[in-house]
Length: 468
Image 1: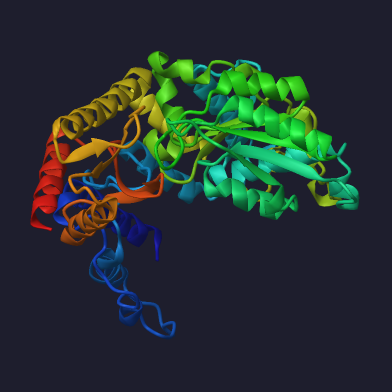
Image 2 (image 1 turned 180 degrees about the vertical axis):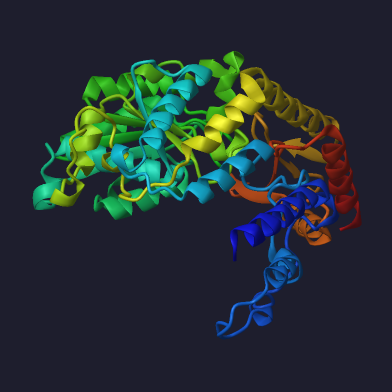
């Protein structure tokens, strides 16, 4: 492809993207294909001779789009969002064009320094401690693993990295509602799932602090080493908020590393009225949230903060001769702040989004999303056939159909409601189980969602419940 052909094809791609986003509501939200359908349309062998770019773009439309679930569709209410925005998309294009591998300061000084500045901006925007140090990880799963590995090294005086486990019996504590990425991190870290202690939750599905302290005391009496506590602000099932301040005091009392996972909810703390949830955050050791979920920034982008950056660097630092530089110690070489050596230039899209929206623009959008959830919550509460399953905290509404006396029948009806809506292609919702009951989850945090989308969804849910 010549430079002039690239310019021509680039304009075509931008036009395609703009048309796709403008007309996204014409597509079924959830892909309707069956396993193997897309594979059957793709050639079994690579082409020997290059193909015209027009054919590539046509195949995206004809072969790829049918197998895409449209996460940027305003009727996407499943899981948690993975939002983008026009500014973020354009920043990603520039990042791809630059093609920098940003492992150390010298491989792209602008990438390292912009990342440091963006982490400072996010601290200011969301009310985090000014003296914390930030780095962009790819996902919350990676950030959690990074924190647990650092906790492991702190608890063992940095011996496991060098000598492996001896007879250390480490324990990690989280609530019974904590995300499965914690379990995975425990497996990868070598601590072992049997040493992940899941603390019971209260009626609002948040960790019970006095039961956490009892578990720690019992483990100390049995010769275990309490290694890490994971607090969740906004659980995946219901956005339950663990009592951070009380848990932080327990962590300090026993000298335990304390990680805070606010993957989805963290964006909401740009609104001062929700910062009571992070009271006591200055006592924690690490914290993360995902701008790629609710801050209009393309996946992947996790903001990860640490109080003691030296512990983080000591855990991950490796310095072969070919990576030694004259600027070491004067700058942040972010390859030492996590697992990957190679790093993408993720800070550019944050810079674009925050500048294009402005802090006030982000606040306005987040408030609107929460108001939509409040509207749906009110409709559920006033309807005799439905009930809220957990208190709404932000933009997730968790509820169920409950008309039948037999809860087994209610479970079946809720499952059928979800299947009917998702099969229609008009909206996409997901479920969870609370107290072993099948319940529905609706998230109102997609970038372009408006009240008319939530009204139509609620009408579909009611209609589906009557026709089953």
